[in-house]
Image 1 (cartoon, one colour):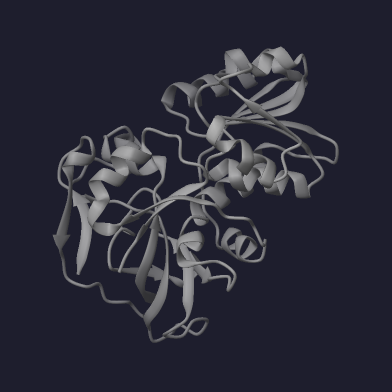
Image 2 (cartoon, helix red, strand yellow; image 1 turned 90 degrees about the horizontal axis):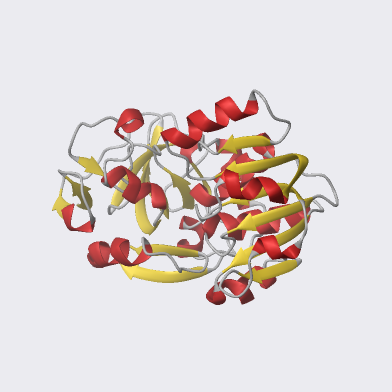
Length: 310
């Protein structure tokens, strides 16, 4: 089968489409014929070698985390799924390997694909959806009427976070680029700000929570926007942010949180039943893997970008 891998760290040029043996499902596993795979910033952070401390440095490595497809086979003890069923899910976040024609996963790593979503839409959900659910479960405790600022709200996490926050009764201010204005309104944001025309600091408002999804609103700049007990969340922290948040939280009522994704089977079930509006901003065939990663890493995609695997 075909699979995208890399044998050295670097840019998209180090990626290769290789032929490898088709995996075999173990007794408690499923073999899934992949139909679509999502692109995530974590893909290129791992490929660039930025996360060796947690992901290890052994090469070669694979890419792709979340996917959707059809069950091609099940292990002897699997009872929850049958061949032919449509599923979506994610592989080990730090190992990757979903960008392939087939993938082997456990029952806990997949859920049934919602009938109302295409394979591309379903593949787009697991990482960003799990991230948004984890933020509101562990990092930001929203209450009805809470003021939430989402910076970079037109991307994948912002797409889900905006919808979930509105369902919890929060008032959402979404900061996006020109291309994301319509989508942010479609997802329910109460205030939509074009960062190219207006700074969020010009609003003269304080927020109970600030969720920075773009990496362009560091904690030092976000603090004046927070209420005295407000919470700031960094969605793609490095070592500096992780250490800095720890020390800051020892001495301040304003809290600095970092998102370190820990997927759970329950998140997939919740996403499958959430009836979310999932926007696909770009679609690429598997053969265009280098071009896809080069383009998507530049930003500007509204919603999510996905590969189709035929």
